[in-house]
Image (cartoon, rainbow, N blue to C red):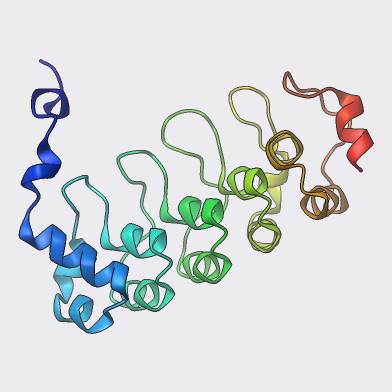
Length: 193
């Protein structure tokens, strides 16, 4: 049987009023409306399966993230396999990432899709130095993790972003500049350091 999304491709036309109200409250930073939802806000899932915490992270609403964490929201993987810590690292939202890590978010988690990508790799791919520092402080072992293609955080930093600050930070923390990669050669890593 085909997945529901292929049977009903226009499900976004029939979104629930509850989803619209919660998303609007979170995106606008209306903490009172989110707080009024109480325990429902912690267990809330929109029509796509995203939690209120994920929506708040994606909207950059740190105050709402704080409120949801205090109410018991957890950094659990979404249907995509990404945790909200991964989303914060990818977006460069270091304040939110720090809150999530303090509340038990997993700095060394990998995406649930089997790719082996970590929050550190995501932060490196976008050149978010503060997030890189937070993640390395929390999970230094993630520096040497590789995805299913053999790419480390250093390879992501060089190949995706080429941010000199992030590259130097990774090398200072012990990244191996001579590691091979299909995307870039050994010389490319060495040239950038």
